[in-house]
Length: 69
Image 1: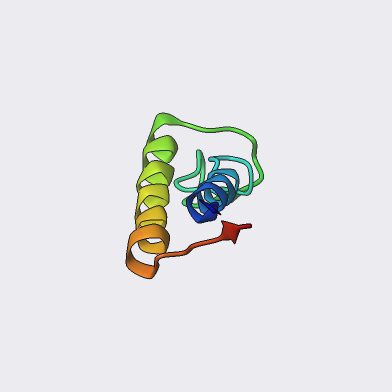
Image 2 (image 1 turned 60 degrees about the horizontal axis):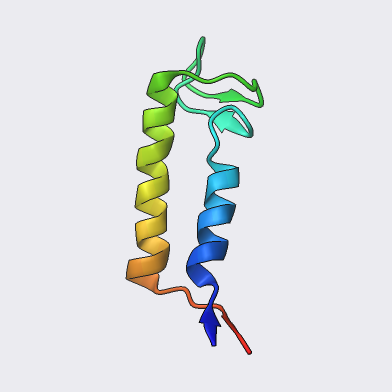
């Protein structure tokens, strides 16, 4: 049986944390901007750190597993 938990969690977090898609932290003019479809190097770094932290929590600390038969 395959464990699809890491794949699903990684894809969902990648889509949600893409800078500029839903939100951008820090924004170009404000601290947080929503749906501006632009990005900067600093926001890519911040979103990468948030992604790494959340995926570590979900996969290592909580241990999410989705199995298929």
